[in-house]
Length: 347
Ligand code: DAH
Image (cartoon, rainbow, N blue to C red):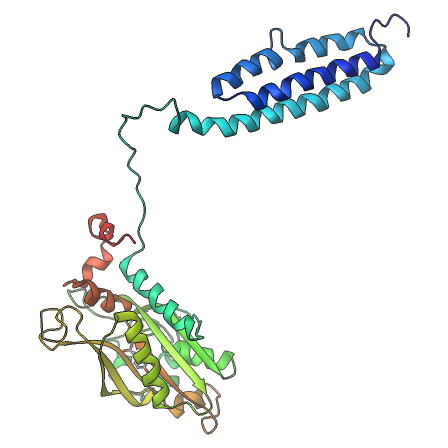
């Protein structure tokens, strides 16, 4: 112990004493300012404990210095961590607590809103999920076969015309509806199938009050053994009751190449309750969706045995539903991202 004036035991006692004093002081500091005073006293550069302890390392025997340094560092880290943690706890109190001026005006908080079309879509998905439907997605660029051919469109159908459909090349187009995902789903999974297919579709339409060249659709598809029109009606009536409240519905015969028979479903206008108004164009009814029993040719083109399996499908536009629900007269406003419009739809 040549020349040492401090033993390792004494040094460790000093370090422990420092920790025993600093920790309760930190825990007891009840404001950011009080904590700052504790920091200055114990860890301050000028005459804090830390400085003293590191200076006194020099009084130890050389052989003991490494062990003493380790003890010193361990305690320093623990004390600094405790300070940082206490700082975190106390800092928010400065704004909201005793230091805040209660007469200051509150800060305006800008919250985003879910777009009214997405709100409608979310609600639709939630209702069908309860019935055991899962979500299926497909590509927005499609082949003419998936978009038309596999869906039993005759080769000369006008929808396939350049006039109505946006072609990327001879054999790639922007899908005009979500129905091609029916075929993709049937190819990918064996029945029983119960899927909901949301997605964007494109048409070569003018952008006016009632048309948009790109919009959202939701497709539904159910395929299993023994599925019939009663399943279609019961499910869609249930959806209408859940989505529109106690709305009355009616089914009108219609035509789609990929369903047979086909029907369009209307719900009684929620704005006038059926008496006729501007929103329902004086008819008392709002057209909600197209539907029908899946055409056997569609099942066969997807490789599904149409003798064994049957199904039903529907397609609807949440954009139109949002317009009807809120009595919005012009579809273009849904695309404007105008915060004065969107701000009205916070939930
Ligand atoms: N694909 C049709 C359209 O875009 C909508 C539709 C109608 C989908 C009837 C269906 C259906 O699945 O059964 O106009």
